[in-house]
Amino acid sequence: MPLLPLDKYPFSERYGWLADRYGVTWQFILADPEQEERPFIVPSLMFAGSDAGRAEEAIRFYMSVLRNARQGLVARYGQNQEPDREGTIMFADFVLEDQWFAAMDSAQKHDFGFNEAISLLIGCQTQAEIDHYWERLSSVLEAEQCGWLKDKFGVSWQVAPADLETMMNEGTPAQVARLTEAFLKMKKYDLATLRQAYNTAAGTARG
Image 1 (cartoon, rainbow, N blue to C red):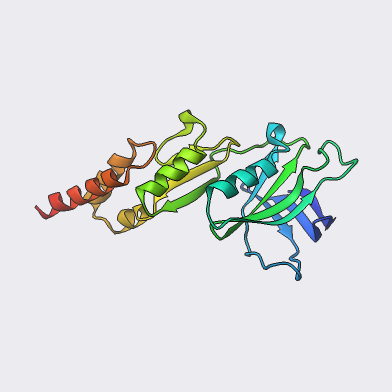
Image 2: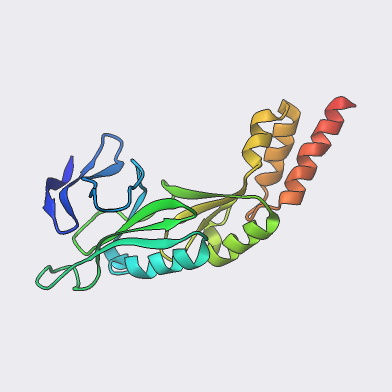
């Protein structure tokens, strides 16, 4: 289903926006050969409803929390583009941890906002990293569960040890069960406790 027709826009010679059969929306944008190359797929955040006009605030916040961050393209709404407020973000992209993202404001009528159906995963090497991102990003206490959190803009994140996937993939059934039992009780992940559960199950299996 088309949401914006394929056409020329101030930020691109060719751009369109549609929703697929699963309700996931996709934006198609013609790359500018004079700009730095972007990845083929870039996650995009639309600030709509009560969050319309907060895209620039969010970009600055995320760039202050995550490393290797920088601003890319910024295109703003001009005069007579109501209901969008002049100066808010029509389209912008930016880098977090060497990953490109895009963001847009839209004060048009939309029946969607941010929810847990889409989340951004941060793979952490240490407990200090987990603590840092959790403390900076988490803003909704009731949303905290199993490494999941929700920030002040309503965007969901998963803050997890990078080696959790390895343990889940390489562990014995007993290790995976013990590990799962441990993390289901957690809000913010405790890396030492997870490793202890995994290693204890390994010792039990050998015994």
